[in-house]
Length: 382
Image (cartoon, rainbow, N blue to C red):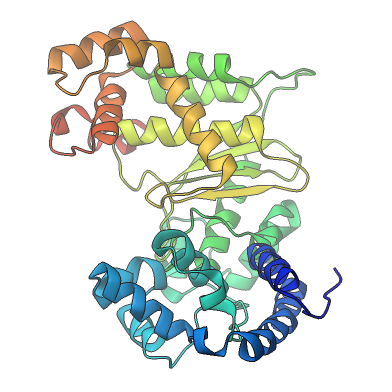
């Protein structure tokens, strides 16, 4: 990638666009290029826009004043209370991921956030937190007397995709995510998936029609076992693995060492509506997005995303569970419990799926709370 001097406003605009692309990549070389580019941007802005220049801290405080926000409102974007304090007081510069969050969620211009700063390097953790390691041990994922490094080496040897996680960035990653713990979780998932034998089939079709057939299994008493078997017939491994401290994760789509796709779910919300939506979201990633270049996709579905593949996966999941024409004909703001059951019967899905969809679309999380199948997802998988 060639970085050129900035000699005009057009060059300045192009440099800001390039800086945004470099932040999205997040690898070491891109961050080095970003540092160089920021120096050029800084020099241009000081020479030509000195009166408009502001530090990132000043830009953040200005937007907080505009919006009536308190420091605690920035915790989901920046991390802990102490980290928020350091950044808004100018004691610490925001990281690449924090800049993206501030730009996306608060609309703070990138020029204000990257024009005069030097980014922290992405942390290269050599290990997960002790809390995450203890959780791995308690789940029986790590072998007796196996230390963390041996555990990671064992996982990486059978699934190179583990090593790709350090290069991964996603709009659906919580700002407080511990990437060491996240890497360990992915390693554990792939070790579990490696134990699963799949049938050999020459041609596999994965799409919205196949997803609809999976959704219909939600009405069966033995839906968990039936689902695993149906996914296996499509050469997809389903792994249910509790999330580790610091991961804030609902699910993931990952390529196994032999190329077979893995859908991994944490069941952290443990409701049937959440389970089926997350499952279909990850199925969409398997059907549409996993590739040689993209072998790991991670999702915290509590985090909004403008990423194209995430929006596509959300739409795929909604239509797989309840076809769009059915929803348009039968949903309304004043749906009753009987209406929920009626629509579920016509869509051939569990009523929790309809109730959860209505709550989300109407932004009303008080209604139908008893229809969501709380606690039933973990119970079904033992």
